Amino acid sequence: MKFSATLDAWSNTISRIVLIVFVVLLLFMIAGVVFSEEPLGPMLVLPAILLLIFGAAYLFRPLGYEIADNALNIERAILPPRYQLDQQWHYSTPHLADLGITLRLFAAAAFWGYFGIFYSFRIGIFTGYCTRFDHLVLLEHDNGQKIILSPDDIGGFINALARCGCRASV
Image 1 (tube, rainbow, N blue to C red):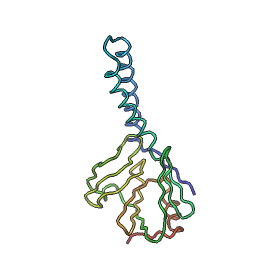
Image 2: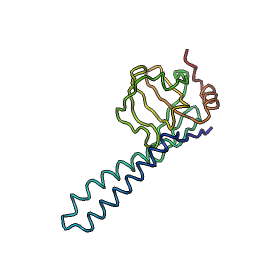
Image 3: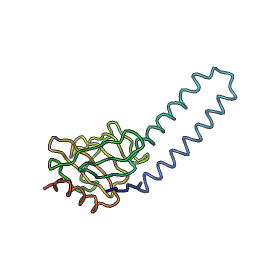
Image 4: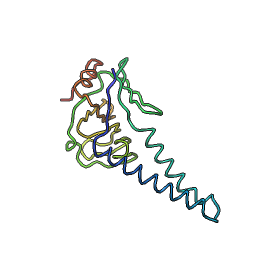
């Protein structure tokens, strides 16, 4: 069963602003390279780094979720993660305030969504594959692994998790 994950207004706005700023900066840098008499190598480093960061964030952003064959698949352009679902997984639907102060450890936040590795002072380290903050689902494994997702249809998503043997958190 597939579940969509759309960007919230904040992430959508930030992504568009960053994209516009990135394109404008890139155009200025290219113009500087074209009309400069300096060696091209050093002048191309910054545009290349910006393009790499922008491209990586775009390719790793969560596009949706699929629950099939007792597994959760995170849909994204490259290296989609897969988690085997069983009775060792517990789910809950926390509010953003339930996470407390959250820090990015290796993550993108508000740029094409909120994905990567985060640290919350209340729940510890977790992996986020979110596109919005108003539809959160927290999956916790008995081994301590935590995943936060944001499907558009929380009810259908939780029903699919329950059919795979996942249990509601107490």
